[in-house]
Image: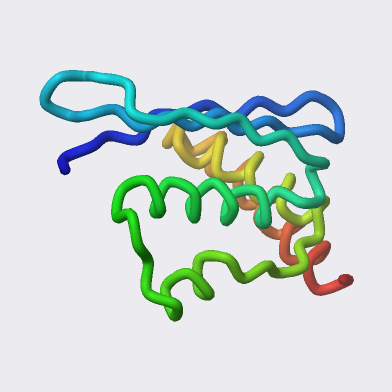
Length: 116
């Protein structure tokens, strides 16, 4: 099956919502959709949960090792992850000014992550 994953991520305060849907590529037919809402500190687990659900929909059956890899949860410092995301946002603008701002956020993310 050729399919396309489409989705959105919305953050409001300490809450984050991921909405993902799977579409058949050839016909644009809706195959599956799900919405996940968690605290921002659980963002990595939320992303992994969504990835595992999508993988199940696409392949039907996952090997045990593959399912374990997709379902593993890691502790994440939400402040470090937030700084990283802000840095990535600035980095995509590709100007000298935003590159400096991105570096500041990336360095903050490293400091926060090392403090965990």
